[in-house]
Length: 222
Image 1 (cartoon, rainbow, N blue to C red):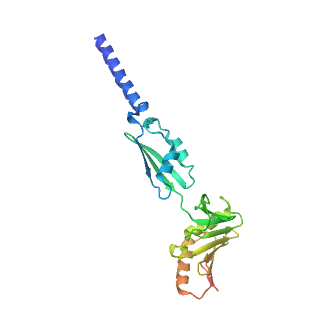
Image 2: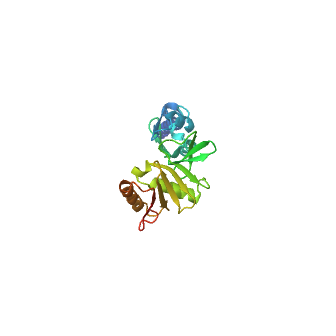
Image 3: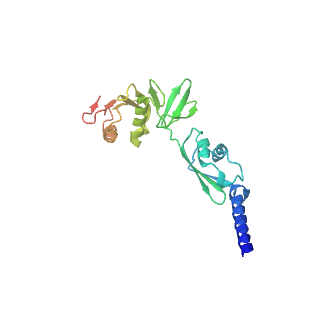
C-alpha cells in the first residue's frame, strides 16, 4: 500500500513537473504567431519588432505589461492591449492616434493629435488638416488645448473647409475657411449650438466674410 502511494505521488509529481515544463519552459507552447489588430497606418511588422518577443518564447512567461510599454514607444499609437491566445498566439490590439492639426516648426510641420501629441513630422501640411497657429504650440498649453478641442467639435461639413485655426487665448479661437471666410468661434463652450448655427449660416449667407458665433445667443455677421 505504501509503495503504491509512493508511486502515485511520484507519478503525480512527474505529471505536474512535465506540465510545468511544457507551459513555462518548453517551446511547445511558445509564441508561434503575433496577431496585430487595430492598426491602419502603422505597419504590423513594425509593431511586432517593437514588441520584442522572440519566436517560441514560452507564451506563459511573456510579460504583457512590458510588451505594451515597448509597443507604446511608437508615437503614432495612443493605446495597446496585449493578450495570450492559447496555444501559441500573442494578440496585440492597438489604437492609433488620430491626426487633428498641423503645427509649423521651422521649415517642417508637426502633425498632432487631439491632445497635442506629435504623431509625425512632414514637409508640408496634409490636404485635409488645418494649420494651427498659437503663441505656444506645446502639449498641455491651455490655448493649444482649447484650439484642438474646437477643431474636433466643428461639424464635419465645416471641418473639411477649415484651413487655419488661430488662437491668442483659450476663449478666442478663430477658423479660416478655404474660401477666405472667417469664423470667430470663441471658446470651447456650447459647441453643438455653434456648429448648428454656423452650418446654417454658411449655406444661407454666402456674401458674408465674417461669422461671429462665439456667443450663440447673439450671432454677428459682417
